[in-house]
Image (tube, rainbow, N blue to C red; front, side):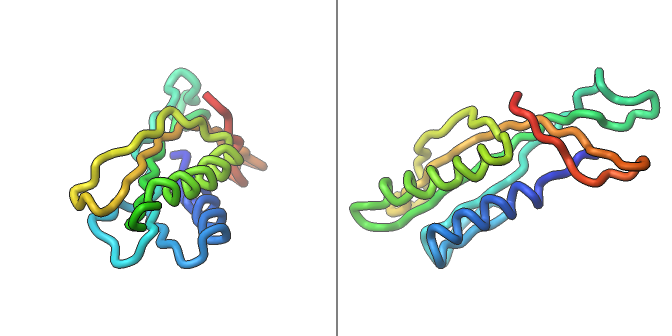
Length: 141
């Protein structure tokens, strides 16, 4: 199985926390947050490109999908804060060759919280040395 979730999370976490000290970044869904702004980064799907698998079913390429949710509760400036965070997230994801397939505002259950939703896609293949996976090569779709 090709697994780059921690690399994606760490890249976004480092970029966002450097730009917005004190921001909360989670690797799962956030039902409520005690602190704002907040970001969640979630791998939502992993689909092997089966036509490239080896005879013993080892994955050579996998399409990976990520969701990013950005939350802000700043009165009067929540949208601009969320969009500034989205710009940093987008740059971090693009550095990993992740392709943004969408970004839009979603209504949050608590209407005092502004929520921006983004989706990304990337293709990954393992880099092997002597049969051992040493990293992953990432490609835009």
